[in-house]
Image (cartoon, rainbow, N blue to C red):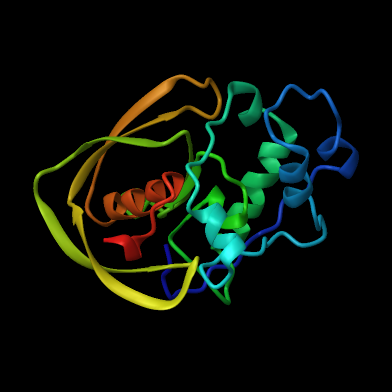
Length: 200
C-alpha cells in the first residue's frame, strides 16, 4: 500500500551467496525465488512487480503459497524480510505496507506499518489471514506500489481479526485490529489472494 512519505532504510547485513543458494536447506523456497531474493546483495531495495507488465501481473494475480516453520527461521527468509522492509521504505517510492508477491515472491508474507502502536513500527506477518470482518465499513483513499499512478476509494471494514504464525515459535496468533491499520491489513492480505484494490 502506498503513502507519500520519506523513511530512510537502515541496511542490515545480507547473508552470503553461499548461504542463499545452498541445496537441501529444508525450506520450500524454490531456486528461482532464492535467486530473486539474493539477485543483488549489494542493493537492499527489490524491484517492484507492477500491473504495467503482463508477466508481473500474472504473478500478482496468483494465490500465494504458505510459509513453513523452516522457511521463517531460514537465512533466506531473513534476507527477504530485510529487503521487503527496505523496499517499502524506499524514500523515492514509500508505502505503509507490502506483500511478498509485490517483489516477485509468491509467498504468504506481509509487512504492515502499525500506526496503532508507539513508534509506528513495521511488523511482519507470515501466513496472515483475516478471520473476521466488522459489519461496519468505511470508504477511504488507497493506492498501491504495484499499481503505479492510480488512487481510488475502497470500502473496507473498520475492524478485523487477523491470524498469523509467530515468527519465533510458529504458533498461531490472533489479534483484533481497527482503524487505518486494519485497512492496511486488508489491502496487504488481498495481495496474498491475488486480489488488487482496483478490483473493488
